[in-house]
Length: 381
Image (cartoon, rainbow, N blue to C red; front, top):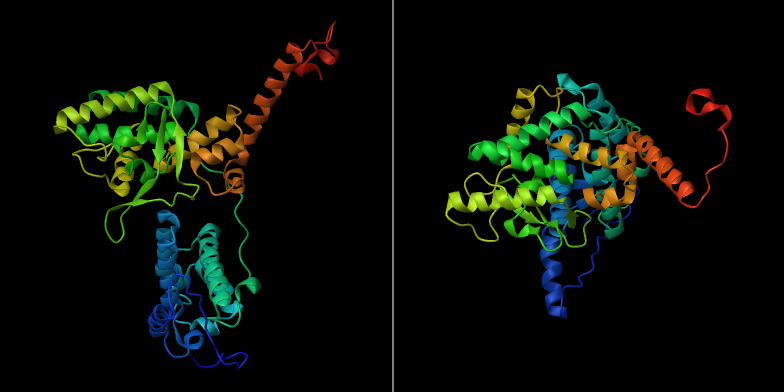
């Protein structure tokens, strides 16, 4: 397999083959694996090609479809134009750090990218090199020595109360009186606002996803569009695979919508889309564009998107005192750190709800002090 250009040591890639049931079968698996390794794997194979194979492996093992699509986009737009041609075994930490700085500064007239985009690239490279190093494909991992940008502290953008009220009224109107296209757009937006689901998850809901006995929506798939429109199931162990409780009004609206769709389209099976224009699955990009047009027509703040509805749902729940862990589960975040990072700005509202709850406890157990409060309350402290 050649020698590492830095250490000079012979490269001896290895791989476990637990799927093999016999020695003969293991040899066949090994031959097939070895045929995919070009001579001098670590020294000779292009980084962008190896990353593409790595991401294919993530998809095969059930990584979230959105994550896979994000990584593929990162390879095309950030890795390939900068360090994609570097052999995987020769990549140096300074080359990666330089690529990050070039991307953020705007290389060769290209638009600069933000820290969040660079951090996605860093996450992809770190995961790939950790695996390649563990499996023996490379002899060293340069990523721990790479200088990366700090994660931005900006908060997720949500709608204000006025915009929320205007949008809610418009969605109800369009669902009740709009044509098929207008009704489908409004229904998808209504579900996203009511549940915090991602637009791909909303578009992938089937009629059977509405569980009326438990009053919830079962989220177990997402719609992807590359290389073609496809409804991809989520791994059962992933955080994205979840049940999201819905309020009575949302449940009744969805039941009414399903009945109307079935009447107009001549009956629909249980595995048909929950929200649809013509009985087919909707493209998330088309839904996103339709909602953006609706938002502009209502005079909502510039930049209001389908994802704004997800942020609005989470922010308003935090303002109402719902525990962060509950919101994490509802949104399908992998860990609570992600939820805290995105919605730290809303925790002041949660703290106010905690203070009001404590007042109820104090009054309920007879802890109310007698006499006039010292200092005259809020205005006199």
